[in-house]
Image (cartoon, rainbow, N blue to C red; front, top):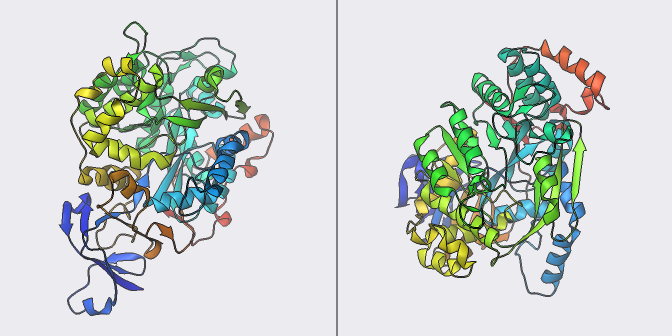
Length: 550
């Protein structure tokens, strides 16, 4: 089908278009630039007079599939039940009629908001088949996963026995290929192994050593980062740092930035590492020091992991930290699972607006958004669902774009948290152009997904259109139109077409000799055969799966 979108104001940082009135032409799945003689062939017209036109949104970090996500659904059925009760009573109406807690609802709600690509940032390789199966079932959006390394015993054993960097490179490449992921995730490097060994320490710093293997967290992270670089994986290593959630942990993330040695590195949900331990309460904002470090180190990109007030459930493969946090469960139930080379913790939590710690967490996230200067290196996330559901993104955008609204929200939180923070002094607001960088162009660039995040001719026709006459949060909650692969799937905020999204992965070259060693390791230590964990190409429908950077 050929059509044109006319009279809209285009925001596309990949073309330096900042509220430029420009018509967009689509032929099939692709944005095109027709010649004068071809323009008449585009008979169908969408007149979006005065509306905001952007590429489809891209979420770089959201827990939407896999073992921990499903365990959370089993532990917290009331999240979905309460949604159904509210909907039936008419007090909350989602235009799709689906909770963001279900597999279908995840795709529907993202698409209604104008997001067309979402990355699951924690695929445990031994659970990859189940995760990929679930990702494939999420409709309307494209997906990809990041494979977890850094606590797997084969890697730690290889480091301990000094197998060498090329050997590690081959193992990392095998892990990515076998799990059908597009990048690497490191979660508290060595920390899960510390938990499994029964260590009682409450902290694990970058230079602390995993006793059974004699390697430090810094060594693990550095080796993986070098492997990522050697293998030319487009996305930098995606790092969940040590000591998440602890007062004073800002030093851990500062050490991690220093330890990158100038190599590219992406630091995840940094709000949870922006904590200093100054003041009478022993808990304060470290956002200034962290933002200064990010601003100075151009090799570093970050996502925020903003918390928003209300009940949610925290999901993490950082078993150690989740085990320590279970005493804060609200309601009082939790799940800690230790499995081969991984596991995780599921802890329900309620962020309260008048609570000092929760208020300061909210403040620190916003401080980081506002003090990190380059919108190409900072990404909008809530670490869904850990800080808040992804459905709170529109409200976060309003907090960033509307100073009066932000001030009114600051007045509602714990007064002590406001007094000891810098947020009330920060007057910066994000422009619509900066929002389009942070949620479209920059995520596509950092993930290596060069076919999207842009409205240039030749890119896939993932397009979101918003009504600027609405309040910012209302505008971004329900797009006026969304086009996915050229198909109009949302009109007036409602789903009008349902189609499958695709899964993206990377395929790496490596020395296949390592497969023999991995096979022996599985045969000796694992309860299942290696064939049970490798995701075969034959699993995928070729129309719903594609490699890039082969």
